[in-house]
Length: 118
Image 1 (tube, helix red, strand yellow):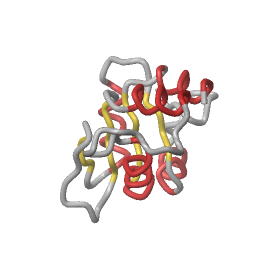
Image 2: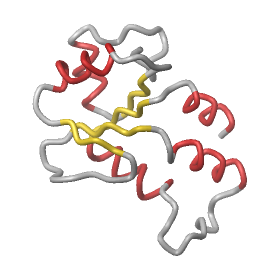
Image 3: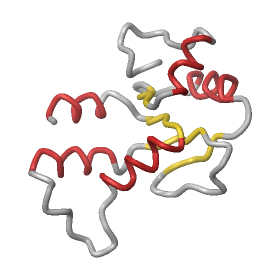
Image 4: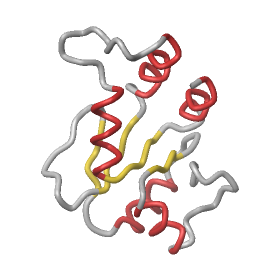
């Protein structure tokens, strides 16, 4: 978990598709009751706490809204990601199944690390 926590710290935007966003939110968002699930050990709590404040951008044609420090990306994903890349920052952490493939096909994978496109 320490490796993945450090990877998160290298990015200031998490770019995900709908499915990955919903999975991430279900696992890492603090429950309304306030207590973390019993399955989380200390390293997973740290990971979750690092993830919470990071801006999330969700590419989805089916969601009407997102929350949890997230913005909804609709329409031309390639154009929107090019605009994201123009903004200053540490990096864009990319995850999902179809989204990395679409961005790689458009030539947007500029890093040798597959998880970061900036």
